[in-house]
Length: 279
Image 1 (cartoon, rainbow, N blue to C red):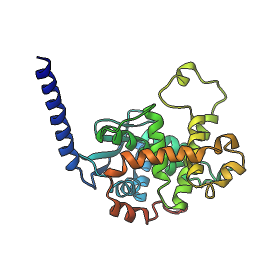
Image 2: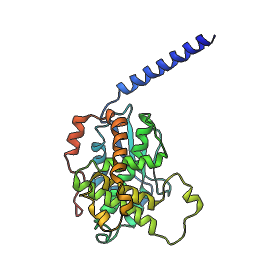
Image 3: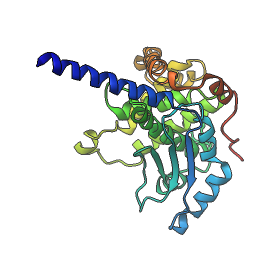
């Protein structure tokens, strides 16, 4: 009886593995669809028009085209009934107009003292980071990737790693703009954080600020040298950032890289993806 049960269990494992292998074998590139959904809220019309003019989702669609996915992934810009958020659910990423509206509302009038971030980059960078963060969740789900630790932290790391694969100028702008967004979020209020916030699934904005700076410095200590020299990242943390970056890189190469078309990826990496600040 035990031998029969064991044989059935082994057969089931082999069958499931074979089915999974067949599903991933059918994976293909250019699996990202995009959609700008007109909002019922007239105040979102400017965001709708500006995002389409800049081709924000189209650029992300092309940048993500080398990833081989087992099914279509949709990225939508749409209204969320007043909730300023971005989220992944069932092969679909939703970026809320309300989230982009908050970014526009908080956009400074001139380059920021922190890293000299251009005003438009305080909108575009966190928008890209949020989308890539949710794309991380999509990869974990659709490719059935293991995650050791909190998935939200892993998605942050994956998003930062992908941004660092852009060209130097774009990577610098994306990291700086993302860091500014976390810094602004952490310092926009003088109130103390509640225990519920500390217990949340996301790290605090301050922690995310230091984490994204660390992975950037670990990737290129020359390009991001001022992160440490200006005191934004403590030397005690910076000392080990190259190791933190290598941990993410190793995980990416083992788990994600097999699902990427390398020829198409090189074509994508050779292009510039951000418009100039004044455009």
